[in-house]
Length: 259
Image 1: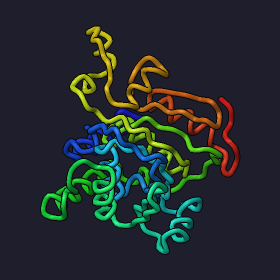
Image 2: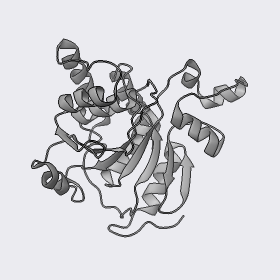
Image 3: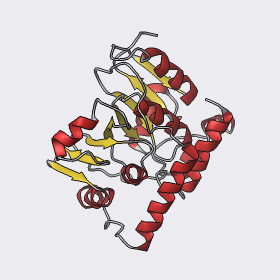
């Protein structure tokens, strides 16, 4: 991971115009996580992931990069077409293609306000999503050989995080399923970098549920944070997480290697 790579990811976040950062926590959460068959680099998938962050909905991601063979065939079996994004909601039995339909569904089922609509604002949001894909090139688009994960990994993330994006791209390319635990910002102190909070001795008390969980687990909040139930490994820092993934899952179609 280079400084140029980080700069390009920051440019992608800037192109999202602030979407996929903030969240509005809700008391009502689905009993089971939503399931999204997704390509990290796909602009239409990004629109759905932004909405999931904004609505504070955890989601189980099944990566379907081009050339992938683990989950792409399953999408056709489940829905009759190989198109992305594809959302399944085990809580209601809903199964939907088309980002606009999925976003409308999420707002109706789990939101506290009306869907954003399909007018000019929606088209501008799509343009921004396409623009956000440009700095990343082919990252998060095509499959690479990788080992198998018997159980989904867990990633504490929010959609527009430039550092979490680097991890999601690698997980997508390696076709490793993972549960996103949304950590969108819902108070001003969430916007302050952890190092700055510590230096200023701010009495940081997160109010968002998964940020509270991080405080309980690790006594700090920084994004991304990866938990691998297959090996027991837990890591902060995108560079460290990428190093771990490349080592633990480097052998195609095998169980992860212990670190």
